[in-house]
Amino acid sequence: QVQLVESGGGLVQAGGSLRLSCKVSGSVFSINSMGWYRQAPGKQRELVADITSGGSTDYADSVKGRFTISRDNAKNTVYLQMNSLKPDDTAVYYCNAYLRTTSWSRTQLWGQGTQVTVSS
Image (tube, rainbow, N blue to C red; front, side, top):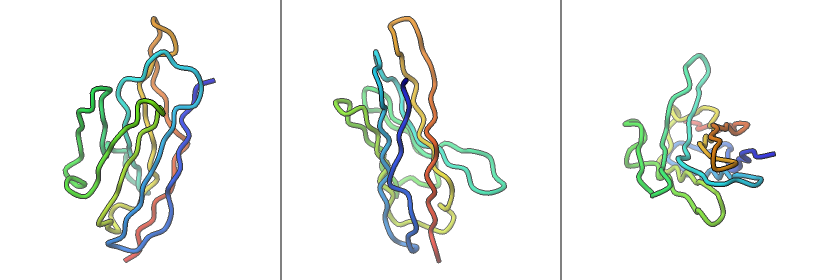
């Protein structure tokens, strides 16, 4: 069974850094785009950053210049380096991936979520 396994959340002071990791576990045919979303209490889930299989990236305006998304295709892993964290970055962060388990099937998976808390 294919699943996304996240790690790296935690508690950090404002101005600090955290690095999130998300690994695709299980056998897949290919992985297309991968990304990170977040959901704060009382708010809708929003895109933080995503990256295509070719390495093209896109970021939410609120994190540009502070967060960096990257991926290691050999390890089927995506990372989110978060610097200069602010209390407004506090949320549950979810990994997302579009992938094919076979050449004819395409599916979207979500990770279990990891809590990031930034104290002021």
